[in-house]
Amino acid sequence: MALNFANNNSLSAITSKPSGLSGGTINLISTQTASSSANISFTSGIDSTYDEYVFKFYDIHPASQQHFQFNVSIDGGSNYNVAKTTTSFGAYHTEADDSTSLSYKTAHDLAQGTGYQILSVNGQVGADADMCFSGTLKLFSPSSTTFVKHFISSSNHVDGGPTSLNAFVAGYANTTSAVNAVNFQMASGNIDSGVIKLYGIS
Image 1 (cartoon, rainbow, N blue to C red):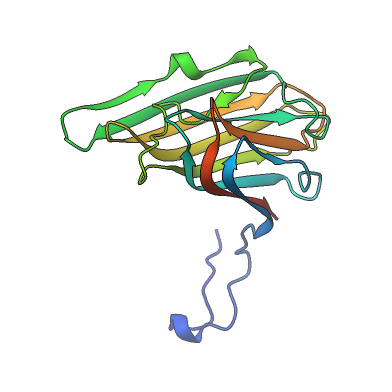
Image 2: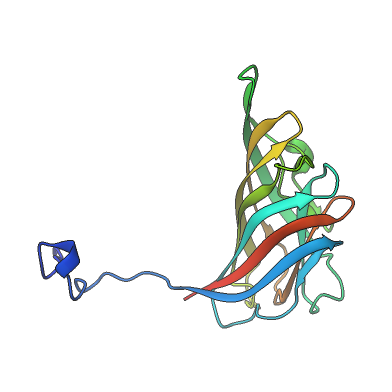
């Protein structure tokens, strides 16, 4: 295996990278900000331009303590009801240091379910003024008309415990139609505040 070296021994003086080193570029497509919003929908920008799309969640704060969830559409957002098969697990640790856990979340996985997939699988997102949900959701090859659409989410949030809850969700939308819209909402009530950014990875 050939070794690649930078053209200078000082990081501040490097003028070019070694050959063979490359990585994806993250490209901001759109930003949406919640303000007592029933939901946030991305109905444009998800197409064949990129093979990977990333949603980043910043300080999603619910109007009342609820789960944060998502669904996908194959008709531009007219319907969010694509069948999904998913798996999820999570860890938590209370502020009081009196309880911890790492476990599979059977209650929040789907087996060909068309409903919304909960991302805060380890517990509801707290509604106290300083509580929120942050994390990422990656969607792979949504425009494929050959394969199902895989996704992976990792996140952290605070509930009313108060407790730090780390959640991991993965699965696939079981459709060979192109997925072209994604919707986010609380299980009940509004998203009081927060920002969601959509990126494409080239």
